Amino acid sequence: MRDYYLGLMSGTSLDGIDAAIVDLSAPFPTVLAAHTRPFTATLRQAVLDLAHGQAPHEIELLGTLDTRLGEQFAQAVLTLLEHSGIPTTAIRAIGSHGQTVRHRPRGPEPFTLQIGDPNIIAERTGITTVADFRRRDIAAGGQGAPLVPAFHAMCFRNADEDRAVLNLGGMANLTILPADPQTPVSGLDTGPGNVLLDAWIDTHQRKSFDAEGAWAAHGTVIPALLDTLMTDEFFQQPPPKSTGREQFHLGWLEQHLHGTSYAPVDVQATLCALTARSVANAMTTWAPSTKRVLVCGGGAHNTHLLELLRRHLPGTTIESTAVHGLDPDWIEAAAFAWMARETLAGRTANLPSVTGARHPVIMGGIYLAASTQLR
Ligand SMILES: Nc1ncnc2c1ncn2[C@@H]1O[C@H](COP(=O)(O)OP(=O)(O)OP(=O)(O)O)[C@@H](O)[C@H]1O
Ligand SMILES: [Mg+2]
Image (cartoon, rainbow, N blue to C red; front, side):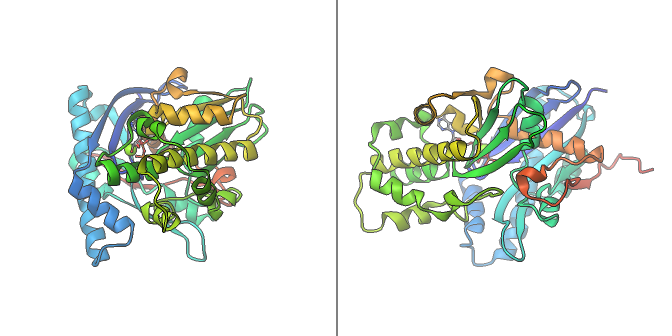
């Protein structure tokens, strides 16, 4: 039997559920098949209401959404299996990230909450499912995020040059991969990726995202607004740090816009510049010797944003992970497929140098398939 695992990811953008079947037999993973199951507008809105603390009956909504999302994740698996022609029995396990509805990794009672009931996924698919990866890292004193750097390191670390991987999802996160094997991998969330761009274009043009950053490219950056947005204390904090919709959302932007009358297109240009500048600042502060940045996540398709980044980082090559053998759209899902394997093998997969955990941990809970023989 080959080492096939299935990863499920639904990030902060709430654009849909990414599902990928990954062959982990060789040292470098191969994505065999992949599928995105978009959210309906009503489901997306319900998750947003819960995530933003705007729901009147939070526990009711949490419970029902846990079930609804569990069913959606299971459907994404079943559709992918059907389209790919790969039999269920070939999949050793599913790694499901879940949908984050709250992420508060700091403070005396830190927590993070990902929903989409893995019991339902295991039950509907008949495949052992590993889920709830982040909380063990938090229990060990970490941020529970970012978790993908270990996977990035396995795929893209190179002994000849200092590299970084930039994931441009709803938030933007950076994995720093020093060429020197003695130097630990580090990583951090740099701030918003696409979340504000999506929210602003949705408000003004009823579009879910700014394709290729074309609308932003038509505007003019407003320096005063950009400077104000950059004063948010998150940008100055040293790593380890991670963020989410609790911090960067439309309301945050509107506070800064209060009393101004900027043209919407110029605000979009400024938001794109905010992502570029906050990423570039993090790079120059925490990874100044980086020669090459490999970009993944949906923002890898935002040509305008990548152009801005190139202007900020003239000595650095900025290119898609596709150039290095992995499609940028499936890396996060593939990472959770890999994490499922590591958990089932009893191996740790968090990087304390990234999350701040006291030690490496075996992550996640295991929901066995009905056919599993327990020793
Ligand atoms: N062609 C495109 N041009 C510009 N932006 C795009 C394009 N395609 C996708 N995107 C952006 O990518 C986003 C989705 O990215 P992705 O799925 O990687 O993020 P995510 O689901 O938030 O994941 P995570 O937060 O875990 O990284 C969309 O919301 C959109 O903003
Ligand atoms: Mg997504």
